[in-house]
Structures are given as structure tokens and as C-alpha cells.
Amino acid sequence: MDKKQLGNSDLQLSPIGFGAWAIGGGDWAFAWGPQDDNDSIAAIHKALDLGINWIDTAAVYGLGHSEEVVAKAIKTSSHKPYLFTKCSMVWDDKREITNSQKQIRQECEASLRRLNVEAIDLYQVHWPKPDEDIEEGWSTMADLQREGKVRWIGVSNFSVEQLERVKKIAPITSQQPPYSMLNRTYEAENLPFCLKHNIGVLNYAPMHSGLLTGAMTKERVANFPPNDFRRNAKNYQEPLLSRNLAVADFLKTIGARHKVSAGVIAIAWTLHNPAVTAAIVGGRNAKQVEGVIPAATFRLTEAEYAEINKFLAEHP
Image (cartoon, rainbow, N blue to C red; front, top):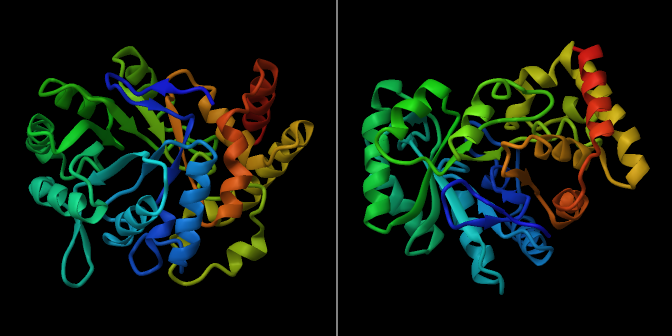
């Protein structure tokens, strides 16, 4: 499995990493519904056994629970992957989530404790909110790096203007944007900016939270549990849902040529962009991980990439 350097860091990453959003469980605002911790640990073990060498989580996933599950999985694995987590989304005693960049140092200590590590390999500002605090927040991130509590520092969901502002304070190792063929917001300006300035890109939701796996159906969407955030996501509602499932069906036809799933094609499409270092791919059990692991090595031809883009243009 080829590896790629992340921005200005010494981190050599597998083309896909394990995304730990869904394994946070169902008891918080942006949950994916109920999740069995044993399934989560089995999924992480399978990913590491198959060559994935980094895990991306966040303090807010499950309100700390995802980080705890990741720590349990690592403790019982012979592999020692890079651990990436995120800060700036905090919650109170009522489990209500707010954005704060004034508590980053406190959050870092909590994440170090939950992950049971002395240093976090990549620490990322989850959201640039409130905007007026990003310079103060990034200065704290740089302090944490100098102190050795985190090895490298990055951002997530930042605009080009915000990237420009914080890179004057300290170098940015990575940007984590949403990027899939259903969400190309960052494609025109943000990704080229990152490529030009050697900022690594770790795109999340390359399969758009399951829509492009090839396993999603209208019936499945209709039966999402009440605490699955996707119930209210616009791409899971009509008229977009029918269009998006048609895209997934088209990806199946390309995947069939190579005996891979629609999800693998969706991931490969994002990796085709030269700005993207690696993609974050979730897995809620070992079987799901096995289904997407071909994305670590499969690559689209230029003709196939053009064929997909033609279909997307014809089905806006």
C-alpha cells in the first residue's frame, strides 16, 4: 500500500484512514444511531490489520466516547497507528454542544487522557467558530505543538480567507474538508490553495455519509432511528435523495468492471484530486471495513474519471 506525506509533517499516511465519527454512538446531536462498542473495536482492528495506519476522531464524537473506544481498540492491537483528533466543539452538563476556541488547552488535556497517549499526532481545530477567535485558537494550537503535547496541527472546515489568517501565526499541516461528488464546495478554490501551500488534505465523507456506498435505499433511509442525524440531512430528502441514489447506481456499473463497490469508486474519485492526501472512511463493523479497503489501492483511469464527471454534469 503506497503512502503519502501529509503536508509539512513527517507523517506517511495510507491512502485511507479510519474515521471514528459513527462509533461515537447514538447519544448526541450528530449521531448515526445506536452503535455496539465491540463492533467498533472489531472494525478498528480489521482496518489496522489490513494496512490502514491512521485513525481520525474528535472529542465531540459521542461527547468523548469515540476517543475512549479508539483507545480501547489500540490497547488490544499489535499495531500503533497515528492518532488524529479535533477540538473546539465543547459540551456542557446538559450535553448541549457549542463552539469555543478559548478552551482548546483544556480540551487537549481531556483528549490526551481519553486516548491514553502522551502526544497527539495531529490535532485539528474542528470548526472555525466563532470566526473572531480563530487567531487566538490557532496561537494556542501552536503553543501546544511547541510544548510537545501535539506533534502537528491542522484545521477542518476552514475557508481560504481563514487559512490565510492563521497561517501567518504558524504553519498549517492539514485541512480537513467535506469532499465528495455530492459536495464539491471546497473543490474550486480551497483544494488548489492547499496544494499550492503544501497543506495536506484529509477529506471526510467521501461516500457522503453512506449515500454512495451502493447499499443505501429509500427504505433504509425511511427506517433510520430517530437519533440518526441523516434523517434531517438535505441530501437524504427528496428530490435530492432519488438523484443521489441514481449516482450510486451509476457508480455500481463502474465498480462492477473491477469487482469493487460503488463506495470504493466514490472514494477513488476524491483521491483522484491531486490536492487530496488521503480520505477518511468510516466503518461501523469489520464487514464494512472489508468492503471499502480496496479503496486503499484502487485508482480510477482518466477515462473513468471523465465518465463519472460527465454523468454528474448531466444529473445536476
